[in-house]
Image (cartoon, rainbow, N blue to C red; front, side):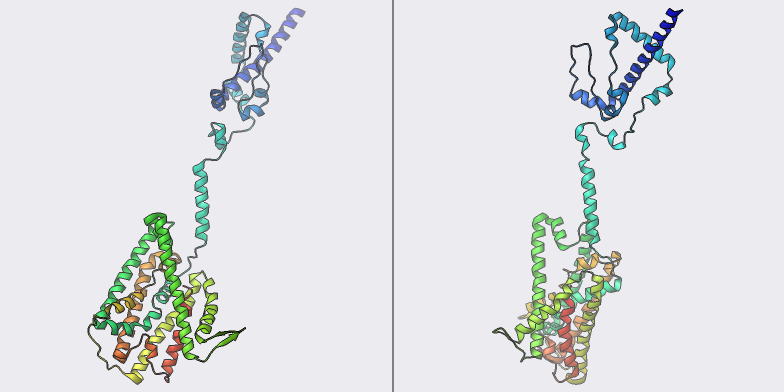
Length: 429
């Protein structure tokens, strides 16, 4: 009786140990997919001793209690025949006593693998994938870049900015251009208007070709690479710098003509009227260049548009009240015709600001209508000033028609002061 009891207890104890061993074997089989890369690259070094230390082959095995502690080898119990008998007996016992549901719960790891760990096949995969990281960086840079662009300008504000950019101080020289080229040369003005409008539409197509193209240097890089970007940047900024210098000189000439006796003696340095007013104009216009939002600049542009229209109205007022329209002019003057071409071409030199106007619009689809309104209004003002000034003063017209206007008239004084104020409204653009 005692022998049978001891035999049963031995059978139960050995059965529990064998179940633990087989569970460990099933777990190791489930982890083969995680440790395949490690085992292929670094095959285990088998020792000739009777025991074998099984180091964890994955992170999950290292934290799992059953897989981290190796089960004892039963080979020391007897001969190989005994090992075969015991292994067959244990396998039948495991099959008989455990269901698949129990095995699944027993082999379930303590920490569930994340989706990112399932895609890692080697130690190098611990780093984030390069394409995913670069795409996130590009997205972040794009968002930060787009955040600096204010798209608040309405249709009217964009039209005001465009007219203020196109209709500048060149309107004062259109009567002189008509005298240099004759009445036939006036057709060059309309040809330049059509060409400039068409190139403005082409500029919009270039800006819409790729989402990252927003400025003239971007267009140059897209067309000709880094060399094109450098060349376009040089030409663009030289043009803008020359325009800024022109406005300063114009302010200095106009103010010095109004106050010819002005001078300043500062620490032994004497400044005449031209230098003094050039310095004052530069300091006065400096705060306006700090404005980056074109929706705010549109209010300044409105002043420039009003000033341009007011100058033309003052010319018409002087012609009706005092001078009259009696000169017939010449049909064509070939000797000075290139001068007229240059002056007419300068009237539509506002393409440098068109990318900024386009990117600042709340509805960019209205940009063609903005261009049509800007070029239409500016062409009417240019042609009207050219015809009235040339018919009023004829061959005696000067480079600026404001210089031919009688100085004692109120309209002449308004025109002169409007000419002084006008460059201040165009400098920020």
